[in-house]
Every structure is written in structure tokens, then in C-alpha cells.
Figure 1 (cartoon, rainbow, N blue to C red):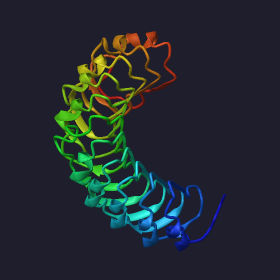
Figure 2 (cartoon, helix red, strand yellow):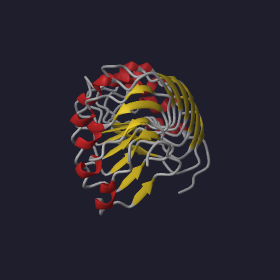
Figure 3 (cartoon, helix red, strand yellow):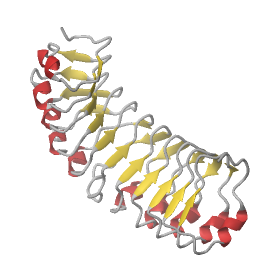
Length: 268
């Protein structure tokens, strides 16, 4: 459907509603306070609309919600700290909005979270060093295309169930954490277009990796890195200041579908 209006206030009267899916329409304006009365909701899908304003604090009162998906709208302001009260949340998707400010530290205390998607906003500051301590179930973390800075937390390896990690196109600096190799479930890793440097041998231990993006990184590329990545389908090395040689083993990656090595400095 392609409904073009504000969200009807009478929806707040549907007190037995379990799932609310208004995605892929043209709803606009703020989220009405009346939706805060739907205390039985488990699923909220509002993605791909033209909703705007700040994310309302009353969302935190919907304690039973497991999926909150509001990507591709025009929400502004900061992510409310009070979302930590949504203690059953498994999927939090606020990507592709106009959110700014810090990533609330309280978000990383919601131990039920399996997916966090904040990609394509204007979020700033750094990440807590212990961000993975309270997220034992986290499988997907999307933070690309923000303005996040400081270091990649060394404790990232404690998110032992991570399958997708997107940190590219931010302002992270410093060295690549040495214990990336502990993320044995990882399938997609995007670190490119930051200000990172250092050795990347640990990445060679991620045997299940299917997609690897390490553009614009200074350091060295181990000759045997490709020997340990038999499932690799995409490899992005462009605009790097890597030293050493382009590994001949790339020719053994028979499942490789995407290879980008343009504008590399240092590799021969």
C-alpha cells in the first residue's frame, strides 16, 4: 500500500494489538502519543515512511516489544536513554534517519538484543569499551556511516555470537583489536574508510568470513591471509596504505565474487 497521511490516532484504541506494521507507506509527521497505550505490542514496524521529529520517550513504556524497526524515516534528535526499559527487545533498527549525539550506553545493557542497526545517521563520540559484556546474544551490529570516533573497543571479541559487524565510514582510529580472531561466527566484517592501522593477522582466523572490507587501512597484509578464508565472496582492499605484496593465494579463492583493489599504495 501507499497510504499518505499522519498515523491515525484511533490506532491507540486497539488495546489487544500484538503487532503493528505500517512500513512502506507515506505516513508523515510525529508518532502520536496514543500509540503508547498499546501495552501488548510485541512488534512495531514503521520503516520506509516520512515520519519525523524526535523518537518519543513513551516507547520505553512498551516493555513487551521485541522488534522495533523505524529505519528510513526522518527522525531527528538523540536516541533516548530510556529505551533500556524495553528489556525484551531483540531487534532495534533506527538506521537511515537523521539521529545525532552519542550512542546511549544504556542500549548495550539490553541483554536480549540480537540486532542493533544504527547505520547512516550522524551519531558521534566513541563506543563503550565494555559494550559486548552485556550482549551475549548479539548477532548483528550495524554502525557504518556515522561520525563515531576514538578506538574500536578491545572487548569487541566478547560478542562471541556476532555474525555481521559494520563499522566502516566512521572516524575510528588506532590499531585493529588483536582478538578479532575470537569472533569465530563472523560472516561479514566491514572496517574500511576509518583511520585504522596495524597488523591484521587475526582476521585470517575467521574461517567462516564471507565478506571483508578493510579499505583505507595502514599496516601490513599477511601473505597467508587468503589461505584461511575459504568462504570469502567479497574482498575490498581499495585506497589502502598496506605494505607487502598482493597475496598470490587470492587466485585460490574460487568462491570470490567481488574484488576491489583500486588505488592501493604500498602493495606490489
